[in-house]
Image (cartoon, rainbow, N blue to C red; front, side, top):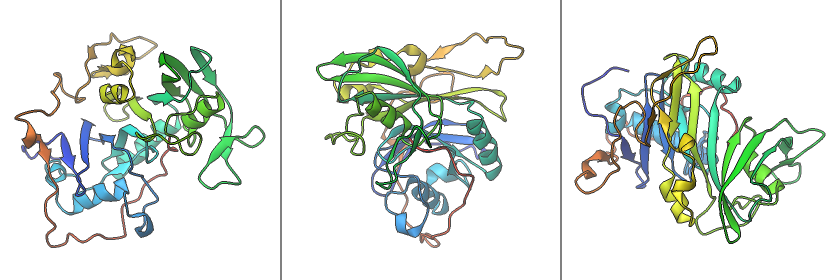
Length: 317
């Protein structure tokens, strides 16, 4: 990426008014806080509505300032999040980076953490689910526990707080099967709140948020940690954000990949923009100029059905 010397906004607005926060950026990737209600594929004209990848590529082609200030020419999601799921989403900034980061995910070198609100309180404080998963042959788009034909799946769970008939649960998936966290929680008798496939509807939608992503960067040769805020998510559902462990709420900056089994000394940093030594405050009074609105379409601003491709990312949660 060529540094133009222009200040790069750390959030931007899509044409429909959706605000998107940029959580992290380096030479190979850009990470955003994915909003609810946006899907990541398939990438065709039929599924144009609320397709986040297409919207981002349109922004690049139409010269949105947040993209031109970064000299972005390419952007493709490395992994998937379901349309109703919010949180950390990693995007590749080139085809070469796409291949490299896809290998990192395929090798299961990525550590992920999610927060979920469940419609009942789990029976155990901590547990691991290893039920194999596969597509439901009856209902399209739905998956299920499938012992004879399903693929291996593993998720670690911990109840962080419980009240009445709901619980705040930390989920750490080891594998990345479609709907893995949602199915494993439903199998335990505590489906995710607002899960219309495996539970029941809720006024706030699906209560599942990707809050942390940690991986060995193949180019920078160090561990990269990206975190998304938890406060609004927890409070919306009546839970205390302080119940979320600091180890997943905070990031570790610029930690080198250890060699010969050596453990690096972590330096924790509060939730903020990764890559900066200091925490940047959230937008507030006097900071409205940090939100960059979508510019009006000009010549060449028409939408086209063709979009840059890439390797198939891991399944969505």
